[in-house]
Image: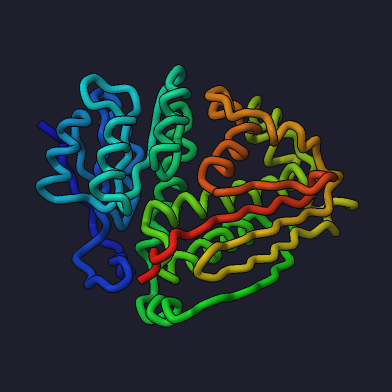
Length: 322
C-alpha cells in the first residue's frame, strides 16, 4: 500500500490562477523502494506548504492519478512494470499540464534524456537529493504562488519587450528566471509543466552567464567540490575585473514566440561544444547538464561567434492561448 502523509498548509494561497484555494499543493512521490521513499520523507520533513503522498510504483501512481490527481509528481526512473519513462508518457498524454520531475540513480541517464524529451519538467540525480530536492520543488511550486488579478491582466497582453542589466548576484539571476517564466505563463501560453521547463532553461542560461561567463569559474570545480566552486565565485564577485562585469538580458514576447538574449562580459567559450549531439552522459556532467536542459526545453538555442551571448527561443502553437 502507498505510504501517505500530509503537511500543514502554508499561509500563502497556493492555488493556480483562476481556481479557488483548496489547501496546499499535493506532491505524489513514486518509488518502488520503501527505503528510498522513507529517505525522501525525511528530506521533506521540514518542507512547509506541501502535502506529500507516496506510491510504490508507476502502476500505483497511475491508479492514484485516476482517483485524485496530484499537483506535482516526483518519480524514480528505473522501476519494474510501469517505469518512470512510461509514467511520463502517460501523464503527458492524459494530463499534459501536470509537472513530472525525474530522479534516477547512476546508469539511467539514457532513459532520463528520453523522458525529458517526452515531457518531464525537470531532472534530479538521486545522488544529489540532499542538496537539490528542496530547491527543485520550490522552483516547481513557483507557479502555484500567483496573483490571480495580475494573471487576468496578463492574458490581455499581446506583446512585450524588456531589458535587464544585472550585477553578478545569484539571487537576482534566480528571480529573473522566475519573473520571465511567470510572464509567459501569465499569457496563458504555457501549462504548469511548460512553465517549469522554461524557468529551468532560463535559469541554466543565466547561471552560465554568471558563473562561467563573468566570473570564469570552471564547472569542473563543482564536479569535484561544490564548496570550492561557490567559494571561488564569491571571492571573484568582489574582485576586478569580475566585479564590474554585468549580465544583460533582452526579452521579446508575443503570442507567437518568446526570445531571450542573454549576454555576459566574459571571454566567451568554444561554441563548437554547444553544437555537438546531446549525449546521456551530459546529465552526469555538471558542465553538460545545463546545455542539455536548455536545448531540450527550448525550440532553439543559438550563440554568437564569441560565445558570450546566447539566444533562447520558445515558440507557441497557434491557438494555444485562450
